[in-house]
Length: 604
Picture 1: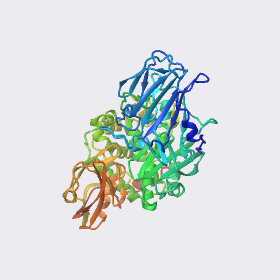
Picture 2: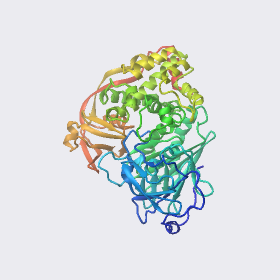
Picture 3: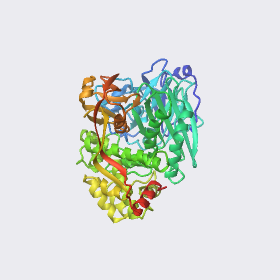
Picture 4: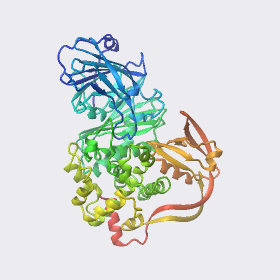
């Protein structure tokens, strides 16, 4: 399992503050990141020992963004005291060229670079704040490191191997999928590998399990110790077992790590190839709170298939300076969201009714909170721009619905023997981590691997934005879909409101009358509902459960405004229940429909 390494005392580490003469030539980029929260809990000190550079390698680059974030980071904003030195420790000149670039006066003589970089959680910026789980944090008893928030690289050296050493309080534990060598260095294939390998340090608890031939570790920081690693892993075990079965018995990785940060802030999660990290509000661990954690983890965990083993050359060779969107975001995020729920259905963790309710929530989002004429292909290509960001939340809604229909279509064409799951496993085996799919030709390649009819499916529902044939496709498995179904009873409602997803966060764009009466304004962020953390993943389902409450009672809503959090109480109104976009098993389903439903629900 991921292990920990010892470091010297901080006193010894900080005793050498001047650049030291290098005893021998350095063959690879060697980074040392020092963190001393007792002296300064806002900044990291970074030292980079360099091999001999060429004259053309005079630009030192910090990340403008990172894969999977779809946001502007501009890490150069957080940098100060950028200095360059020769082999004898003599200062050399360096000047700032732009937000994220420094130019070395004499790259051929430069053997060491040192700079200070501020942590992103508590450092105020005027625009483009960085998602917490994608940033860096340094506190008295812990730290969170993401490679792109700490490290840069010399021009043309993004693809070069590197070493990373961390200097931190000796009592801290280190949680990461990486394993240090005998000297305490983490060896990484390249800069992309460093960005893909988050590290959580500090006062952590840990637990581990085995899934097939893969080692899986869970590291947990809990500010007041309400969440411990071993009990949390216990709640997650059934989901992990379901994922293992869904993937055919063995994972496409040999090691995996979950990194959990529980404190006073919630921001969601960020997937990586061999690990995932989570920033969630700390609450007592029980079955209800754990289910929310499990639902989020199920999505992030499935990224070991997409995009780790199935990705285009745009993801393979990520451009940290000027990122380009991929048309196949539907595959990386929409299919992953589909899998996170489907594997729980097929693993017996959720009932068919609960699964259909999840589909209902996704249809509601697609129909009421997104532009239904905006195609998934277009969303992927524009995902880094403001236009795409306005529709981005729909990749998890329409994207997952489209994957659900693709699965049904594949099962129908194969007589129930080969659904989307089987095709994904074939693709993962054909390509894998080091062989990208074709950004341009993937639709054709997928069609050739399956059936000619699938090409028409892609053209109509992914490349274009034709209305999804939900009624037609679900009828194939004996499930009715109705746009409006009256029940004849009264239910509670929070009123007609509009929301917008930005990254992982949900904002009110038009508050309902009950919300206005409670003081909620346009632009407020919805952070929680009656103690349940809310983000773009679970917002639709959490809001939909309001109807299960009693009309004219108060609903505690956590909102954030101007950086401050508060709880407001919204008095729920009463309304006639109309089940919109309802999925209901058809009692008159034919034997053929029931047979295909059985294959669909148990397709393992």
